[in-house]
Image 1 (spheres, one colour):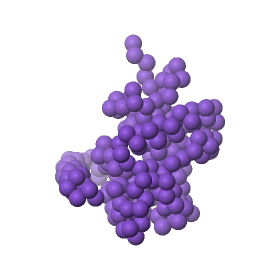
Image 2 (tube, helix red, strand yellow; image 1 turned 120 degrees about the vertical axis):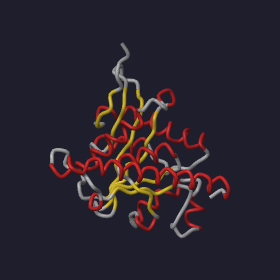
Image 3 (cartoon, one colour; image 1 turned 180 degrees about the vertical axis):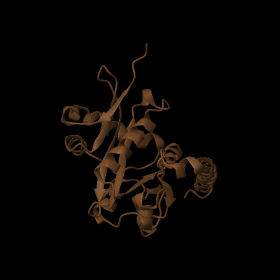
Image 4 (cartoon, one colour; image 1 turned 30 degrees about the horizontal axis):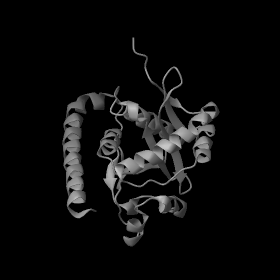
Length: 224
């Protein structure tokens, strides 16, 4: 029987994976023709030691995937960054498992923080949408200068600066806990209104999908 991939919070015993992870981050970005803020093996290892990362591995120890938490603006904002899956495991659903686990870890560690992400991938946008993220303008993200300084190593940094940090190749998405409906499934009110809520979510997801398609089309037409 096929063994299940283990997705868990990373720790100090995982630091040997750091060079492999950062190498794959860089090669993956080059293959997609997009830019990422480069991270060193030391930086990734530190996230593991701090318990601010999620790693996916095979039971035999083979590395599968990774993602980490960054905190900005005095813990007002949290970013789930550096999502990467080894080529052999892509399109297996493991990216969604990693994103769900890092999202849960972020909510546990920083329950009041807004969680945001910047991505060029439609698949990641869909995962974020399922988690409750919504597309936003860059103005709704952190204004922490250290965060934006991390974009300097991205190939699209000149585009970002030419637009006064108001837009770039990446799509910004945000989860705001203060503005997010989290129903209590045991409550009478939720049971009474569950069908209405399901219809609402279907309409919302349909509109979001159309927005993603429009964004992708505009990017192709205007090289945005």
